[in-house]
Each structure stands twice: as C-alpha cells, then as structure tokens.
Amino acid sequence: MKPRRFEFHSPASIEDALALAGRFEDEFMFYAGGTEALIGLKERVIGVGHVINLKKIPGLKEIRLDAGKLHIGALVTHQEIADSPLVQDVLPGYAVLSNNVANIRVRSAGTLAGNLCFAEPNADPPSMLAALDAEVVLLGAQGVRSVPVRGYFEGPYCTVREEAEFMTEIVIPIMKGSRSAYRKVVYLNRPSAGVAAVRNVVNDAAAWEVWAGSITGMPERLDRVCALLDGLDAVDEAKIMDAAAQDMAERDVMEGVYGSEAYRKHLVAVLAVRSAMECMQ
Ligand SMILES: Cc1cc2nc3c(=O)[nH]c(=O)nc-3n(C[C@H](O)[C@H](O)[C@H](O)COP(=O)(O)OP(=O)(O)OC[C@H]3O[C@@H](n4cnc5c(N)ncnc54)[C@H](O)[C@@H]3O)c2cc1C
Image (cartoon, rainbow, N blue to C red):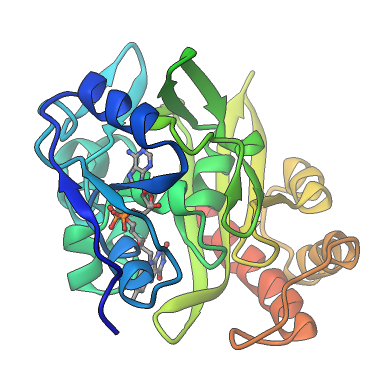
C-alpha cells in the first residue's frame, strides 16, 4: 500500500524540530531510522500529514562516557552500539544484545531511541535498560526531563513520553565490577520473551537485577529471582525456575503469534537461569 500524502521536513536543529512538532500538533511524526515509521505509514496504520526527519540534526550520533555514565545519542543505531569499542569495553553485555536485535538491515538503520519511543512490545532493549537502571532524556515545550526506564513504559506502544517530546539521549550508569547478560527466544524476527540479568557488587555483596521483557509491554522485575540470587553463590537451576514461575504467576502475559501465555512464562523461567548463569561465569 502507498502511504497517505505527507510533507517531509528536515529541520537542522532540535529547536526547529520541536517548533515544527508544536505547529503540527497531532498531525506529525518524528522520523529517525524509519524502520517502524515506514511500515506504519505504508500500512496506513499511521496517517499523519507531516513527517519530521531527525537525521539532519547534528550532535545526536555520539556515544560517550561522562562521569561514570554512558550517553547514547538519539540517532545512534543498534549496530553502532554493537560495534562501539567503548560499549564493548564498559558494557559488553549490552553490545552483545545490540548485535542481536532484529537483522542487519534493521540494526543498521534503526536507532535505540526509535525503539524506545515506538515501544513495540516485543523488543530487546527495555528489559536490559531497566536492569541497568538507565534513564531516557526527553525534551519538549515544557523543558527537559530525565525518566528512569523502570517507569517509562506503560504498556504496548504506550509510554510516559508526550507525542511532541523529543528523546535526546539514553543514559546508562556504569557500575564497577558489574556483569550483565541477556538471553531471548526469537520468533519471526522478534523476541517471544527475553530476560536481562545484571549482577552488581555493593559493599562486597552481590546485588542482582533480573528483568523480563517482551511479555507484558513493559519490563518486569523478577523480584523473587533477584532476592534468591542475592543469597546464592552458584546458580541453582531448580530454585531459579521455581522463583521465576512464582514471579510470572502474578503477571498477565500477552497471548498471540509470539506464543501462548503459558509458553512465554516458561521461557522467562528458562531464560532467567541462562542469563544468571552467564553473569556468574
Ligand atoms: C522486521 C523488524 C524486526 C525487528 N526485530 C526487533 C527485535 O528483534 N528486537 C528489537 O528490540 N526490536 C526489533 N525491531 C524494532 C527495531 O528495533 C526498531 O524498528 C528500531 O529501533 C526503530 O528505530 P528507528 O530509528 O527506525 O525509528 P523510526 O521508525 O524512525 O521511529 C519509530 C517511532 O519513534 C519515534 N521517534 C524516533 N526517534 C525519536 C526521538 N528521538 N524522539 C521522539 N520520537 C522518536 C517516531 O516518531 C516513531 O513513532 C524490529 C523492527 C523490524 C522492522
């Protein structure tokens, strides 16, 4: 199908992009890599009269480390994150995750910010970013605000970001001695479920963050798994499976083409074991 006719704008600054967004109100969309936007426009699920291209805005392609935090600019693609020597050095688990998002065509054009703004429920970054306690920076007419990823998602395709708010960057704290791993099961190019495990060391003791993704439309902390792992010296597969099953019993998991509720809950338990094991190696 051909998209509805739209005007294509290429502002040269964030301020100009925001001014256009303010002018066109409900009749616009931002456009970064276009991997989701183009499908939506062509299928006419998205029918806006104005597309605001972000790619000509300078300064949004940077990955940098500043005061112990990794900053990833709005136009950085998944593949650029995967290939970044800096990310490979300070956050190797996240580099591996990025290298396994979708396929090479989507990774080369699709941005991390676009992934988080679109909030497609079957996505890899949210659970890992939640486990790492990352924040997204949003800029709008009211000014700038930082939102923890843990409170950013509200459900499938739904976040606390206002339509006219621009995501300028993603900020991830780097914890010394921390290890991270992400495991997923993929069906038709997207994850049916994924689990991110992060093992931090706080006051010489392990402090785990284990989060499941692609199951409810928002990252879900596996509280019992985290508490169990905090007190374990080695992975106990049966205990983790049991704790994850209890965590999952309280969740309403999406049904559909990516699997039944029972199947996806089982995947979460298996993936919790695997990602924890990888962190402990
Ligand atoms: C075939 C296919 C397979 C995929 N498989 C996976 C997968 O396995 N795992 C996974 O995690 N993801 C997967 N994805 C999703 C992919 O990660 C996203 O499509 C990509 O990251 C979106 O980025 P983009 O730059 O192309 O966004 P665009 O398509 O340009 O934009 C997406 C949305 O975000 C908005 N937007 C973009 N940037 C900003 C910004 N800076 N501020 C405010 N709004 C913004 C746009 O207005 C639009 O609504 C898949 C996508 C496709 C098409």
